[in-house]
Image (cartoon, rainbow, N blue to C red):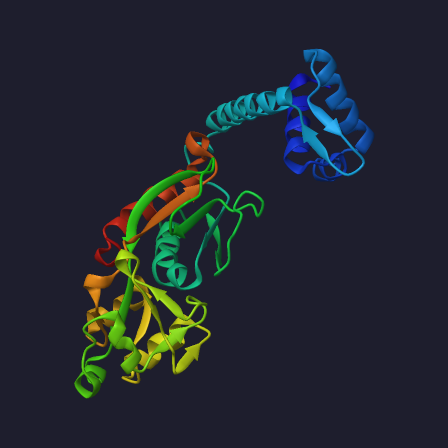
Length: 296
């Protein structure tokens, strides 16, 4: 077995922490995987993995070698893709994830334009309100709202969003406009439990207000609809009410008490080695989202 293939096997074992899973994913026998890693350890003269009955962990030398192997294998893949043309031209299927409402409102139009621009491409979307591990779930691109934890993912900032209080003009005519967050106790509140699990709402300068919502909705859309119809006030991210703000159906209040904005990033796991399909989508999405005044 050549060293390149042995390195691929070692990297997969390190990622899955399992010889059996590696064998399944690479269509090999478990003994063949074990022999490949053992041969690699003999070749370089260092123990790379520590095997127990329950897990497989990298040694200190294994961690360093793992990073070097990933870089070398990525360079080989890039060279092969460039030679074959796929690095320069988008090909295959692109998978994209975002939160449900943001994905439908702002990401999906970019996806359809992308498919129009590259008619040989296909796309899969996963618009869902749960954390998605894009590496483990095989996602090419993610659009995330909020502060990012440290990771090896490439991140491109494309805008910001704000948490805002809003209501309809008809509501304000009937009940008046709150002057401070403390005034919310005297108003009808429709709270989205999908966004605000706690009855305590945080505003700028660490101001906290306990809100007794008369209406609790399990979706943002329902809370927004109740506000749009003039029933009460709600608190959402400003992008979620963008069309209603433009149409004059909703108005933002208490803006001077808002928390700092949340960043929007486009993420992908492959850095400078990203294939053409990813780079083309990231470039298009970044341009479209940055020019959207509701997101900047």
